[in-house]
Length: 188
Image (cartoon, rainbow, N blue to C red):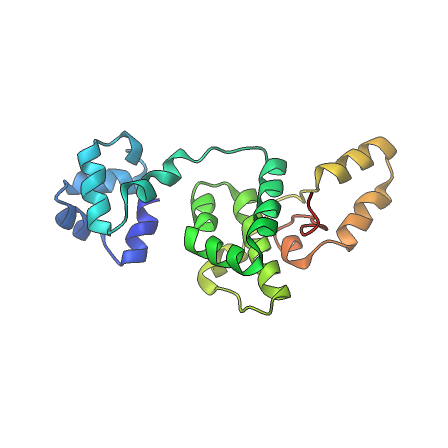
């Protein structure tokens, strides 16, 4: 996640090392994943955060993300949309850079779901898409992912029409990533 901040600030590893006053080898190890930021001394994190002009909390936050089940993640995103409203959700999602953070962590279902939701909410509100994630938009999950309810219904009935109907009525922004999602706005 350090590389994300560096890109955002237009800073190379060499420039960050010089500006922060930390060894280049430390910055290189952090960027390559050999060393984890949360394992660095408080002084090193402080120096890097100052050089990048971000708080230590912002810099370290991605290090402490906990991965929950995908169903819980989807539910949390839908509730966030409901609580925040469409426009605040769009703004918050773009500012948080969660899509990129999840993608860099190889949490592809979460990254794709959040981007699909962002694109869907943007479309229904006639907001232009942010092109910052065009590289991620060219990717998708290897196999389709269905909601737990659809999987349970299919397992109980064995009726392939259940799967077909879910695919036919799925939201296009989610289908692009091989995620079958039909209902994201009516959460309880």
